[in-house]
Image 1: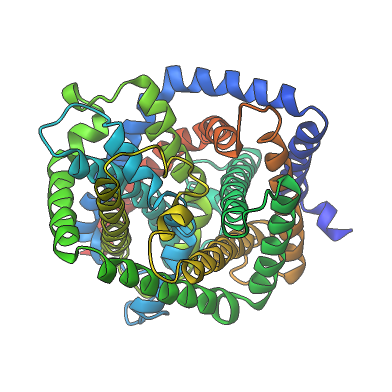
Image 2: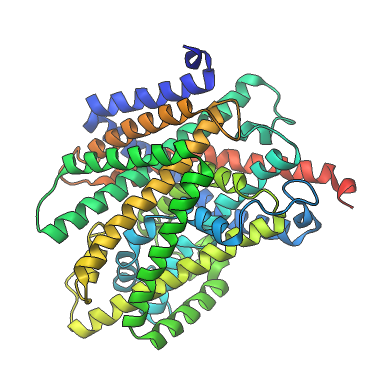
Length: 496
């Protein structure tokens, strides 16, 4: 009964439960309402998302290279709690995970076949450059902003693990602070169930491809249950015994998969594409981020791709950023911010260069392209069908999809538990169980929403849902960043 007396927990779960029940019993009406709301957000706030993304990148770079970058998350003589290898594995597994498998082939090929805008670059290089743009600095800047602000509040100012702790000096009203934490929790849950919905649907697509069967939504629901159960066990074990170990296994297997494709393909061509696309990305980053002039891909393209991606990263920013903060004790702000921005971005760029360039080579060898890689949920399995030991590669991919989803879910369960268990760094296991159960229920409602109409899928439902739910949080991030700068300026003399 004491959990019912916890307003942050009970109100947050009440909102999620209400949403879940509405979707269960009014699925089509729910989809139509979300569709209308997403159109309104796109029309009035779409470009705000773009400007916010660019602003976050520039803001983090400014902090990192300023004297404030020397601030250590913890005592002045403290050492990083986790090695660079363990830290990178955990932040990457929590922050990207199954998404790089979902889009590894499909997105670069789509960009090659449908260039976002006219360019003097080769279609293949432009395709990689735009893919880098949607998976690079901006995504990690959203995460990094949260990691920095929460890490500072947690390890420097000794606050509780709550987003409201980052602005409590400027907002003292307890109802307002609880509202911010509830908004954070609800946004986090929506972002997480979106990832589980997409990931389990891709696993289902992989199983159908490997076994030439037609598993439906029932199988997807069972997969979601399996992933939630494993994630709960991992979160139950804690960061060191569960999350860290699974994250390391993920990165090792993913690296081996990447190296196999790299060595089986044209290595020189991949390295040239990687270097060229990365250089152009750095040169074009600002005009691409503003959709300025000839870099404007059109509203339809922005809505289907960039607005959706920014909404997705925003929805993941609370739990991923807070989890990164939780594992970054002992690092300086400069180490945290440059590490978060550069290390995973370069790894992602190389990943897409390997799979994208290899897919381009396959299409060229075929002589024609008939949308073989068009299905986002099966494209990577079709791709592996052109390599030796295809069955082993496909099963490895299915394993990774499950494992990456587990590390994303267990990180989120742990963070949500910290929130609702009075901001404790090691929350009670009862809270971890509660969140594992309710995340599963909400995921099932999303999967049903994605099957509400014959002409929509989970991806479409997720795109529209996240564009709506991320907006309040996007607006709050601006205030949070401003409050953080004010806090740093007030301690300037202490830094010197």
